[in-house]
Image 1 (cartoon, helix red, strand yellow):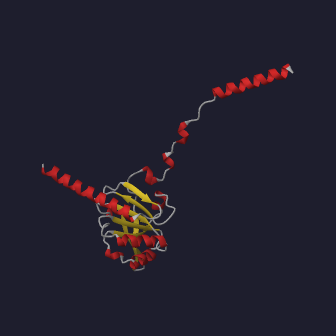
Image 2 (cartoon, one colour):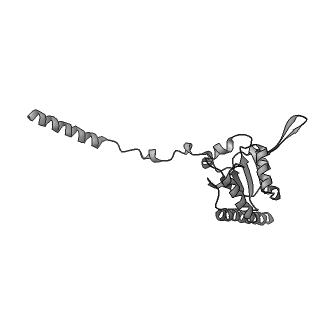
Image 3 (cartoon, one colour):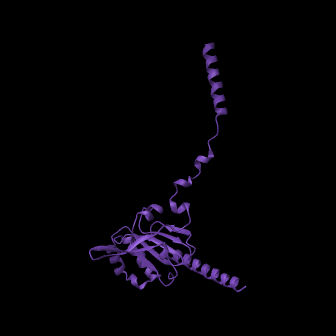
Length: 203
């Protein structure tokens, strides 16, 4: 009986010693690993844009019209919208943009899709987008945009300021009131920057 009691005491002592010597959990394991974040959250810079806005055939050869970052206007907010011409939510978003186009005229909209150019052109025709010089529609030449933004739903919208730096994104379309406010803010900031530059040059 004494041997059993002694063995129990030794086991209890060893267990207490183990608990006291156990190292605390590493707090770093709870921190977000930035390498696992989507690319748009790791960098503020505008992504690479490469769109086919038109595809025609001449003399039996395919001729494409390409739109890239070099074609973007300077000193204007950029709104990237990844959409599907067949998506009901995308069509609703387009209608909302049309309703607010006067207050959004300072922004430049880049509509990106994986669908064929003919399908995209059908969408453009339906909404008379030729009336809006601040929009471009095209089929992405690669699959870069959906990977860059880790897109799961359409319409996906990402907003960049007049310096082409990331501001905000929306997974399933934007709140128009908030979008109007953001575009107005960046447009105002751009005007202020221009005035400052003029004053500095005058000196």
